[in-house]
Length: 84
Image (cartoon, rainbow, N blue to C red):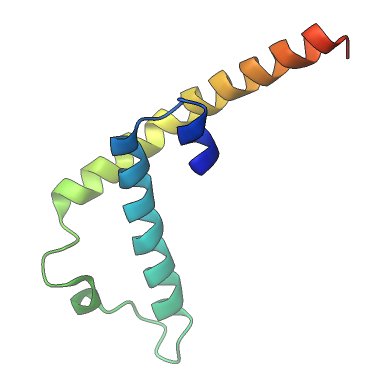
């Protein structure tokens, strides 16, 4: 994500959204692999994970393919200029 930010493919706001989603995902993974195999919603701080954040996650993830395609196009231009 730092690379995408440094390359100006995402802004700081989008970076923060992705970082928050990564935190949620990591927490869910850690909770799930414990003995009870259940995610404890209370560990998200009450209403910390709500429909607003869910929708933000969906919208953010939908933006990623275009961002990665832009990155791929930029890398291809560099390879072409170098004669590869």
